[in-house]
Image 1 (cartoon, rainbow over the protein chains, first blue to last red):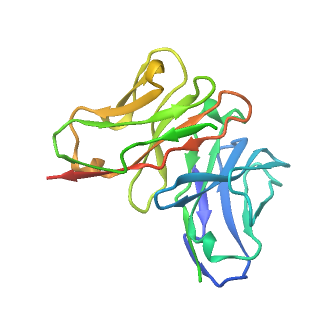
Image 2: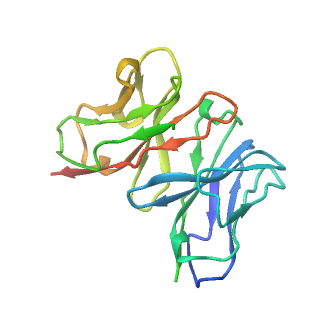
Image 3: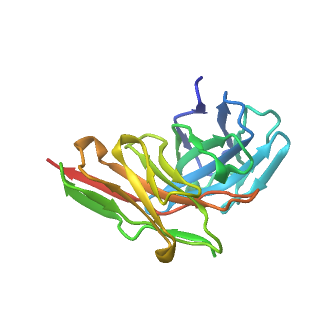
Length: 115
Length: 114
């Protein structure tokens, strides 16, 4: 099993550009989520999904879109990148929608810089 | 509002010394509790978790944590620190219900002196 994979590992964007961060898992997990990590802020939840076709907002959803057309994939879209979106982005997944009852597995992260 | 607090931003310990990292939570009911570790440039790895039952939880890499309901705390401990334990440590909590999203503390960076 590859676990949770994320691409790209690094990305530099100009303000106003759009892009998609890819996340895939091969563990047949129902729950998937996106976090951003900023220095001194810990990890903050952007969006999450409890199954294919179901998504919801987390703590900091503005400027980001998600979709979940398959169990395996959960892409994160930046519609119009802003310098405030410079961050490290982590995707995570777990077995159950009640993810508090099971371990979340994290991907290696995508480091995004917006100029 | 629900929250997780890690009071120490940065801790330095000598190799071989004991370690305790503090975590306090504020939730309406006892949440599920987790400790994760992040090595530089890496993702997060689960060290241990508490759902219910025995309040002393054993994890990987020789770590343990104790849940204290009266203090709303879930402190992480290790009796003898190794240089490879240098990393950032995150405490997290989640409700046990169907929307139990994780809330993370801001992390404690551990440095280990030789």
